[in-house]
Length: 142
Image (cartoon, rainbow, N blue to C red; front, side, top):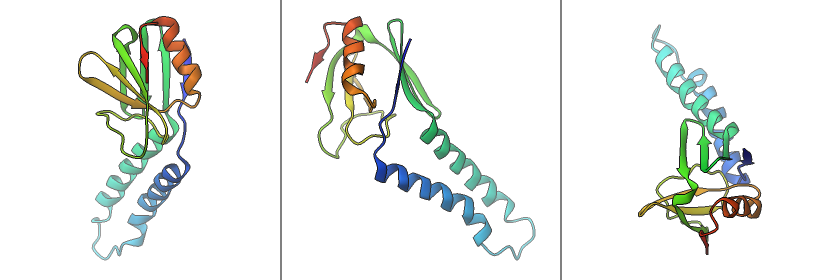
């Protein structure tokens, strides 16, 4: 098993942490004139903050056997490496991908099966690509 941590785009990560702080502080900034009504917003804000924290601290990619396993908080999945046909270096801000379990701004778009793709952002991109090519040497790199 090889584990690869995600790369971080600092402005995005800082913005997400500010949102977490705002979500935690928001229920305490609202007036609580009516007894019991502040409980539901606290629960909603806490769940949203916990979800964002989970994504921020638990995003990584693993190569186990012939599978690429990814997780980003509750988003988890695996891809058969032998079904990967193309890896593209992401260019620009517009990411053309269906699934994006990555926190970096310069990542990889992995195309597999006939129409499926995923955007990931491993910190050590070349080592990640090399590890995939060790398993499936037929992957085209663009």
